[in-house]
Length: 577
Ligand SMILES: Cc1cc2nc3c(=O)[nH]c(=O)nc-3n(C[C@H](O)[C@H](O)[C@H](O)COP(=O)(O)OP(=O)(O)OC[C@H]3O[C@@H](n4cnc5c(N)ncnc54)[C@H](O)[C@@H]3O)c2cc1C
Ligand code: SF4
Image (cartoon, rainbow, N blue to C red; front, top):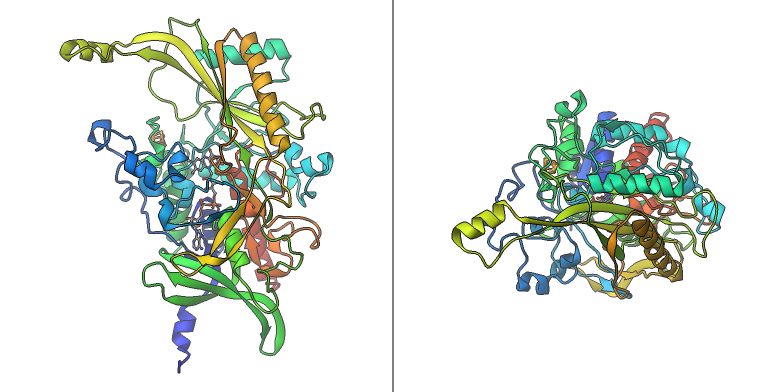
């Protein structure tokens, strides 16, 4: 027999619950607490405190047991995680280990995750471009997926809002496909990147601009950043270790401590959300609301329920899908809000499969000094103003450069030292990686495995996501166009690199499955990110995205989250939630 402990229920009742403490969950926590809501933030991973929990951040290369490299054992034990470029000896502690969090790959998919307070905000590469109406109007114009329920004008003020707080560096380039933001001073392009920019401007008459990347680094901190306890980025480029200066934006350095300062946040690490509780009838009346969440303690595996008036789902795209799919009730036997059977479908991502590299034998009298945690960026130029190829949409690309050096490794003692201090410089080398928009399709989906569960008894996610013909055509076009552009600019030794059997996932930009839309028959969420069928549940991470654009998505997740939180609180105050 069990007794209802009233006090305990009271203790477990909040105004709002946020599931996940990563980039989007951090913003939900900041906004909801900032507006006075007692907010419970549930995070499945361990606590990671800003600065004190960055164990490698001040280590020198020679202090690492394996000089920063992965051992064969580490690679073999983590075949998926180790495919991510950032999974190196200095940062493996922020990545989940493959065997601890299994999932089913109906089709090969590299699912890279960071389960801890701060989520992937500690690990990300910080590229932060706004999306434009070429993105929000994309599906309607080009006839795929469904129309977005919002346009750039709906989100532009929220971009400004989050940019000012997070601190985004960039140049005002005046490009319609890449709207300017509230920028801190930009990083500089290298001489070779500038050369490429100038040659492209001449040859393509302004239709293929190359710019310095926009990124979440404090190049010139403002009072709001000092108030967060953050300081100027020191250009160390060791960001994946966690930054003791708070030089880049992470939940740990920015939104979570800000939310904590309000005294309204309860952060509960090691709390694995199992599902959302849906209440069909409350006091005999039809409630039609979610009342709380079921949480499994990561260590004791004990289940506890927490309650709130509104719930923000920010577990990152695929895990948010998993939680909703696992939230079954009489009313929603196929997952919360899933009246139309679309939950988990139309998952899309960014095509990061291919790169191109080249050399330039000019600029021999220059080299780079110091490190820059950024690179140049090639905004989308294909199919922007009109459809011009046999594939839909387009790609952006990163564009970085460095001077090749050789060290005399046969030398010893003084010889080796002086070879290290004065390496022989070779040509400039550039490389560019494609970031292609993929088309959300019903055939790219996630679902729950019917028999396999994880260590917490939660069904494993089954992922069935693959490239399609559009992606293949886009890769070929990237090779052709970039080869032409590099040739025009005098680059030599141009080499394309593609591994056709490389699985999707390493973009780490999963989106969709709980998409926004105008019509409850064809979408899961309305324009405020509320489930059509359960209005007090908001999904504001990548799962809500109707299409994927070519730009990195996290800035848009932040803006969408802040916008939805504002709406939620307004609705609550009107008594509508
Ligand atoms: C190496 C790398 C480079 C990247 N570079 C960029 C970039 O340059 N630009 C860009 O825009 N994006 C980049 N990304 C992607 C970016 O990190 C993500 O888009 C972003 O973190 C997503 O935010 P989120 O809040 O949805 O998820 P996350 O930041 O992953 O946070 C989700 C949180 O939810 C928690 N969680 C999951 N399931 C549960 C559960 N059941 N119960 C409780 N908690 C749960 C997780 O532990 C995690 O802490 C990069 C990612 C990586 C790894
Ligand atoms: S580059 Fe800037 S943000 Fe990155 S670790 Fe160094 S100081 Fe921190």
